[in-house]
Length: 109
Length: 114
Image 1 (cartoon, each protein chain N blue to C red):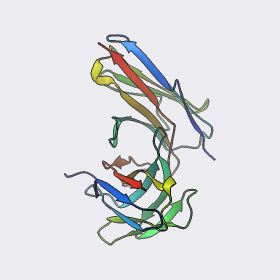
Image 2 (image 1 turned 180 degrees about the vertical axis):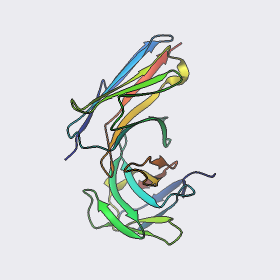
Image 3 (image 1 turned 90 degrees about the vertical axis):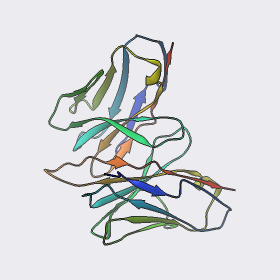
Image 4 (image 1 turned 60 degrees about the horizontal axis):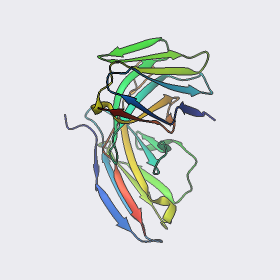
């Protein structure tokens, strides 16, 4: 059974600081890994998807890496802004998505 | 493109009642998955439908059932509601190509069981 863990559970940083969010998973037989953003009480917004054959993916200030052999992914958010405050979820796809519990980020102005 | 849509947005039911949630997938998508997200937790996989058949199922009791229609839209039914069924129910649609898919999520249905 796939287990996905996200560390830390919560993070508070001043505006402008870089964010590093970690995700680990137990079974490396995955098709891809997605990072999502969730605002309070809302649905999920897909941020980045990394195919199992890729090592990283970038979109604007966001960069995600994937090390399938060690079962780890990291999401980097550069120069954080108050609008980045949200919960960030990683999910691995092995025909279904298995999610971590998320990291709740607060960026202080 | 309207994206994934879900209805209703919010729902309040009492214990023992039955509920039906609906999902319309993104245009061109043929696979629909349902997830349950309790407060403060990550979403949990309920089941997935493809070509009107349940393709795989998570660790949920038989009280949770579903259906996919020929137009790929889907329903999630929950019978004999329990207080613990209170959650955000998320629908995701996808299309498999080149041995991978990207799941797109709807806004969710917030179910409250009293």
